[in-house]
Amino acid sequence: MLIQNPPDIASSEITDEHAYLNRRQFVRGVTGTALGVVAAGLVPGTVAEAGDVGQQEIQNVKPGPFRTDEPQNSFEDITSYNNYYEFGLDKRDPSRNAHTLTTSPWTIQVDGHVAKPADYHIEDLLKGIAFEERVYRLRCVEAWSMVVPWVGFPLSTLIKRFGPTSGAKYVEFTTVLRPSEMPGVRRPVLDWPYVEGLRMDEAMHPLTILAVGLYGKTLLNQNGAPVRLVVPWKYGFKSVKSIVRMRFTSEQPRTAWNKATPNEYGFYANVNPTVDHPRWSQRSERRIGRFFRQATLMFNGYDDQVASLYNGMDLRRFY
Ligand code: MTE
Image (cartoon, rainbow, N blue to C red; front, side, top):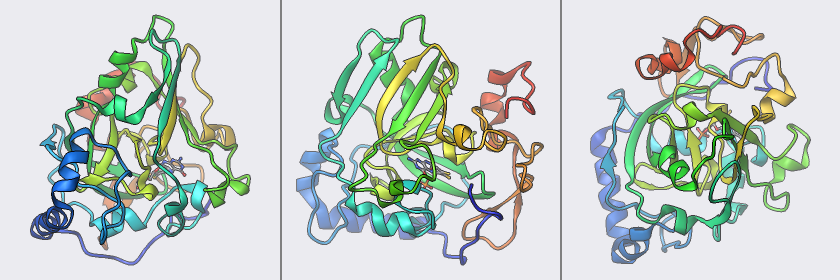
């Protein structure tokens, strides 16, 4: 993003299924029944059991659709190599600094063109939601990628509850802005708060989810606790973290990266190996944890699902 060349980190292990299952059993053993009670309603971040790091096991997670069977990145990679500029620019900064963010209580303001605008407590929003594990590729605009087993649910489930009216053509998402808890926002890297947006049909698409966890447990702050967007066919910067506002608009929202450098970051930000970033190629990517680069796929490999959303659009112009 602000860097000259896509960054690299040392290779690290991919978590295999055996290690994953062991970890799940370990977490169940440590946190046990107390979490069973709390997690039935999923109240992220409210219980920090001795010996864990403030995460809770999310119960009754069903395998979701669109699951890639590529090897999943390790929990360590996913939680220690992050972009969350509100906590610093270095990939390790979010894992070092984000623990200062208070994620409970958490309210999401819903406003604009909707029948039911309100400030919703996250507990109320998550009541009755069926959580799914969605194993998705995440392709960062910086030309690295990961495979993440998210726990979440279709964004469309919530949007339907809010009742968008005919004026709602886009959804704008805003990240929490708390300078006292976010050391990175003291520098004017972006015009804070971090804002992203989707066209309504993109927001309603079954691939688009709100994630509340990964590897079966509630999100750590560096990954966007308590709730973040995941749009797997778009560059990672569209997947806005720690959401406090969803505004339904008739105009295309002005997004943080597009405001900062409009010639580099467009509104659509669809993964597209044929359109280079002005400062580097987007043809290939480095999967974190692997040595060799691999080809980047159109729409990050989700073209069968999403290409029709952009029929007739010049994707060089609408990048
Ligand atoms: N959301 C906020 N609020 N601030 C950020 O800096 N970075 C984005 C996105 N969401 C970012 C954000 C970018 S560039 C990427 S690649 C993904 O988060 C990374 O998500 P991850 O750290 O969970 O892998």
